[in-house]
Length: 155
Image 1: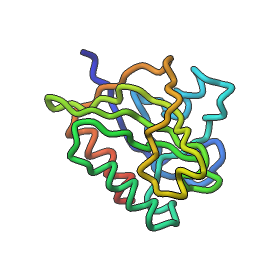
Image 2: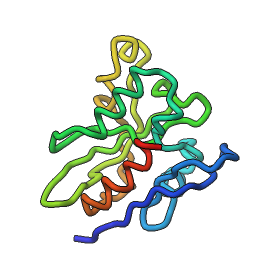
Image 3: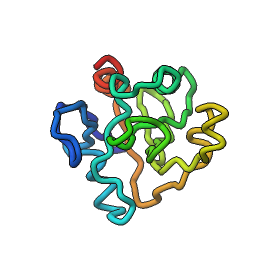
């Protein structure tokens, strides 16, 4: 099984002139990976779900809880729109599983929760996903993954 390298680096993105923590996989920005395979889906320039950039306290708490879950499987919001920096616009979900010292992003897709569902709470995020089947599974060393992801959570 190929293990991918995940890094969170301070980089500028398509729509942000400020450097911010950016998820890279094997040296390539995650939004670029998605854009290359789905150029018509407007995924270029999406940014990580940066805790310090999300204003709403309930949204922050939701994202932190999903990142810190002890569950073996979780639908994790990993990217969001840089315009609003919230969970109401485009949100990219990774279906994350943990096994034998590895973290796997089994599938990646676009959250399709409706406005009505979001008004009832954020737990609906990840329950309706348009999976992007051309995106391969990514496998990460659990220790490296947690170290890198903490750069988003603790930023």
